Length: 434
Image 1 (cartoon, rainbow, N blue to C red):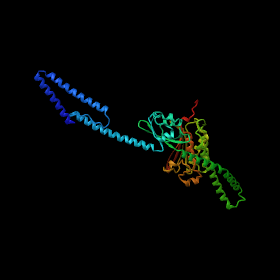
Image 2 (cartoon, rainbow, N blue to C red):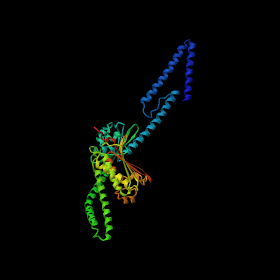
Image 3 (cartoon, rainbow, N blue to C red):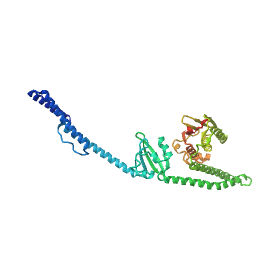
Image 4 (tube, helix red, strand yellow):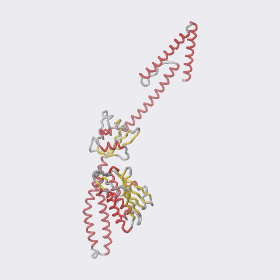
């Protein structure tokens, strides 16, 4: 290109020199120069017109106009750039087509929307699961097609740490799990899974546990009653039978506690989250739990303190909250050595109502903490046998907090103790005059 530009400048200078010479000979130097410049500008405009026509009206792969000199090299360079551009475009289009084909083969639905929720693209599975229509719903807001208040709130909240489970808008018999990921400038990539089978299996499991627990309660009550009657007849029972009867009575009590917790957990899992109309007064509730914990401590003489920084009533089910808070406090008493300290705190900060229980017991290894709220999970099975725990307490706490839009956090250091904190939204406080 540099050599072509040099040759072009030489030709222009030769043209001007020749025009100057001819003009001097005929006595019209200025006129000759103007004619030469006009000729040069005219030829340049012709080449620009040819370039414009080629760029605007030709398709991919059309040869450039024939030309020489600088303009010939400009045409050739642009043609080479075009070929590279079209080649890159074809590769990208091939890649996009493969991505679309592979995405359409997925059993899970995939939807792309902009930041406002306008639908840009979706695959075949999303059409089946949600009833989207190709060619008609493009540009529609997704929350106008999935008309579920929970989905709209989930979409707008931008907190996608947990998936949302709702019924399909097109096929109510299907249960869908929706997960949203942000990309670009708050655009959304939405994945939709059919979890109907898992939902049905979970319902069958809950029903089974509930039914079995109900059926076991009656015979267990009978057994416990007879064992209690026999244990009172100490004079007529041979000494060799007294210890087996005491052991049977202890195991029957454990079984009864287990059934009670299973039934409570079953009710929590199947009941609707309607706790907004109930009113709970935390202060008398916590003082009663403190007294119960002192009674549970008995001869072990734990130091159990209570700190209440806010006395406002809150929206919540008192019985459920009593069960959650007492579970945490009683666990702290059971797993703290004699003479240890259990601190109960209740207060409100900028964004949540918080109830915490701190002990100076043996603590929990970090590897166990993520699984502590699973049913029957025990960080130390031998300790649980000593304390008579059912392994369902923290699972019950988790479900109660879920019913109150809250969550449980656990902080523990082996050898130093643990802190269990219940957090529920600050909007649940009932202000005076509200």
